Image (tube, rainbow, N blue to C red; front, side, top):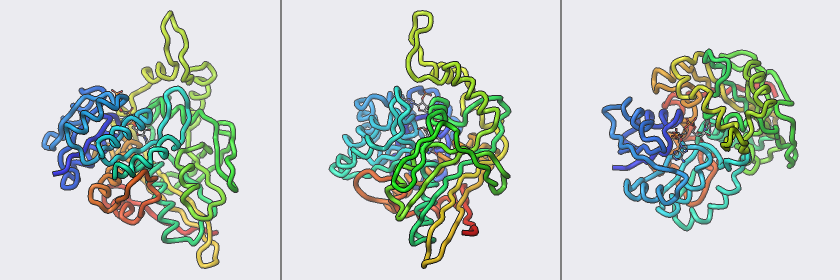
Length: 394
Ligand code: NDP
């Protein structure tokens, strides 16, 4: 029987655990480990009949991770802790020769810098250890990269432009809250925008470029250009690409709150002195904001995330839209989690399932779009994330 080690016990982890249990013939025993043991126990208690063990681990420590992976003899490590832990978990996987999967690229706690460099640098070590490391198996990155790979494989000879369109039209009833880890989310959206055109990165002010997109089953929404990590790997792996951009929807209330918090320095990630103590404003803000995991029962509405790709097939211009729509309340009914955790956790489970079954294999570090999209797309349809393809006028 296989053993699956899941690190982190937050919103995304809850979904991964539920979905792995639904696919227990592949995942076998689940070991759920995180910094706070009680959070692992809470998830375990939701699934009393499942084969789950819990453990406490500080995932900033390679030594602790190596001990845990060796003791439980994990066949795979699913990293759904924070991006800060990517490198330590990867290093522990190298040391124990254990396959690795994550959903977000490495970030240093002191810099809002989103790049694959330090993870890609571990490629040789993964090869030497004879193991596979799969990067970015969430929704975006993750399913969106798969949509691009699927479009490349089945619809185009060359893709010239891609827009990734991420809409969360969920309403949780709070004036301001984030749908996943507040620190990670606010660092991402308050950073400068960036897109790639004709071989160059073009930087914009945060939220400088806006368009309105009519999202199927949701309606027209203001969508803002952001830098998002999958752009970095997709420019390397999609043939003939001339431009790629990422847009995300934000409501006015979210933007107004963010602007005010930014103006007063609450989004700062450097330490400041407060009554003789050092605090990081963003970390303090996180303690004040609703825990994303608590949004599940209150969130109504849908998510719609997809890609629009334009290019050439057999000498003719072509434009397609691949997207996935998910209802927050449906997600909660199935996994006690809102849609953003759900749409991230399901692709993490799918990636791990394909690795454990040997359908995806290889040695080294891979971004998800380097792998065959077909089995992933089939799994999405059967694991709760059905998608659609529409042909648009080119
Ligand atoms: P949460 O903050 O809800 O959960 C993170 C978990 O990691 C918590 O259980 C936390 O423990 C644990 N953790 C943090 N630091 C450590 C540590 N040093 N050692 C052990 N455990 C630790 O985050 P989410 O579930 O919302 O997000 C999980 C991951 O998914 C993040 O990397 C995020 O960027 C990514 N993500 C990816 C998306 C995609 O589409 N690709 C979309 C959304 C999220 P504690 O509670 O004790 O601090």
